[in-house]
Image 1 (cartoon, one colour):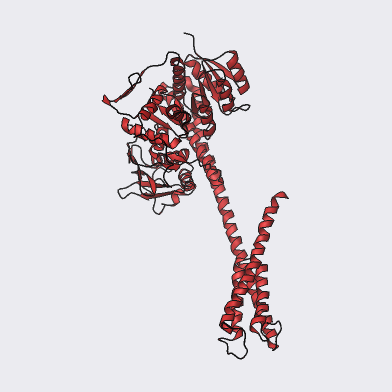
Image 2: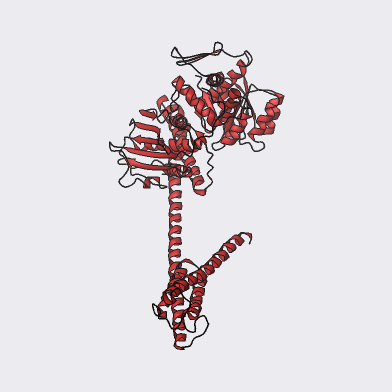
Length: 379
Length: 229
């Protein structure tokens, strides 16, 4: 199978690293044991050691344990065997030779090897179980997200479709008998619902791009107030009944970002404010800068974020329970997309409640170096 | 004056029908082509006054069609593109297409683009109007005179050139590349950020808030558009 060879390479290089680590750990244990047992000298049977050689055994067991927690089982087995051999050579007379003078050491070796193998087996088993639990958790989470996605998509697409089908069938069946006012209202419904579907599908596509890493960020030196201008242009109709204030620092520097992505972030944030605050409630947007970043704030005067939801609002499918309304407005992807896009710029986005009431979204886009110098600058 | 003819090159039948109904109700004559090749042949056989060109045709891409049309004609071209096709859109505009619409678009937007494109095609013949007025902004291209609400605005030569290119093309999108070429010259090699710095200065002098412009609108990733009506 052509696809399997990279995996095999990775697996075998992992095994190799494990064996190397086993050799290294054994060497370290030997070196430490050597200093504690022989001091900084060659072995000398006449000198009294700092500690009994059996205590050095513990160092080797420690090495085995360390290897077993990090590397495949084979490496731990190798560390166990190397440990016994190194112990025999360095700490059991005759020194620097394989073999023993006192045969009771054979017993020591056997117990040492057995203990090391048991440790490595137990550790390996614990590790496998943790990994399996982790994978099961991830699977369950993926399953949950998939189910949520399917139910959200089918619910949120069906609602506008129901509106469109209902209104068009009324127009076809009894269009001539409707009052002009009702007629126009039907048409307005169809238009609004179709636009809502369009927004949902765009969000869904964008989320897929953010998730799959298929997002193409094309950075250029941009003037963020310009981007806000075109975002607000797109929202003109939806902002018609909203008092909107923009506070722009005239000295905001250019910053290297993808204008289309940042426009989408701004549209989503303002959309979010429109959806979660009562009609006619004001929205304030400011663009300023500090030494390291251009700072955008989008603030509203609604009921604010639910308790402790400051970071959860950026989760996919998160819905703030809107008191009294009882119906959900979108898929809950808008803010997750904002986070994905801002992350892709190396920026930060946070949500907070304003002391005077309402929510505020705070974005920092990093200023990375000055824009490239321009020639023939005019006075 | 005969009705202006608009050639619609679009493979999706529902969209073609929508365009035909809308344009005919505004007393334009409409011709249709479902593929790029057919559209090119029709444009040669019976040259229209304006072409509406979809970017997602099955046989030819928008850039190729625009280039092949521009080999022999200045007929205005309005591009219709889906979202997420910014690159292809900008390439077609740089190759000489006049304007664009992003799907889904409303009738008002469509008709405004068509009117502006036809007007620009017509004024090219009589050298255009030397005076531009929009709300408080007054630009006299003959006398190189710019005022906002009667107050004179002092612009540097480059700022003035930038403004004059923008108002001469009022209502129509101009790409970054086109602005750089026309203001600084095709060999200047200036980059887009330089243009942004100048736009910011120009807007400040005209008292035009970039976040809520009255005169100069930003088309992200594409260029700028001066308001016209």
